[in-house]
Length: 216
Image 1 (cartoon, one colour):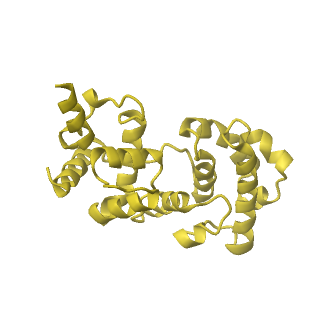
Image 2 (cartoon, rainbow, N blue to C red):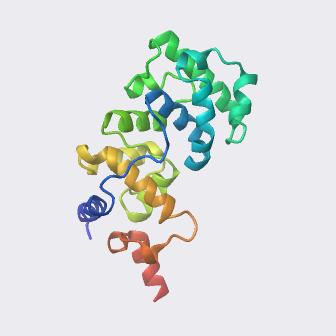
Image 3 (cartoon, helix red, strand yellow):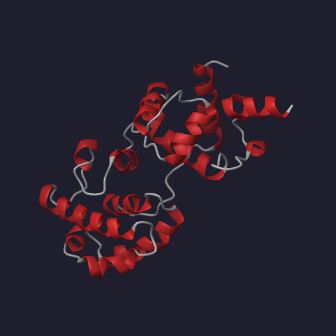
């Protein structure tokens, strides 16, 4: 199977089996999504969703969060990974929104990356989820799954993987493909003992073809 055929197979599979794939983070507006995505770094969406309601109730807008002290916010997120850094990032992010963007979440990658706690992956998530921009956020799931399947070749960094994926996936599908790969990595193509027996992508998967030959 050529690389082009592999992409075609996988895109068609997800269009048929996961046409409405979307983020599992719970949010009502771009500000809430930004808070949730910052908290989700190296943490499960499930844990983030248990944590954010108290934050949103106490700080419903960036203006309130910008006035929060470390001691006030930290207890609300102490169950999240890296709570010290994330507490500082959230307060700094809110202050930057108020000072530089009139309290509104910007929708360009460059502007988002000016905010504390926001790297390229987070900026790609916000722009793709909120605005359906053709941005591919490469987290550990996307990086692992795309390499295993054979969608990316010799990609040593998330940025290299992002460039390859956006080159071969049709632009109008990139914002959905991000969720396809994340959810597939979260529930099927897991890091240890991937569930190849129940995977609908094995026909096109380079990892499975090698594993299958070794087991014969």
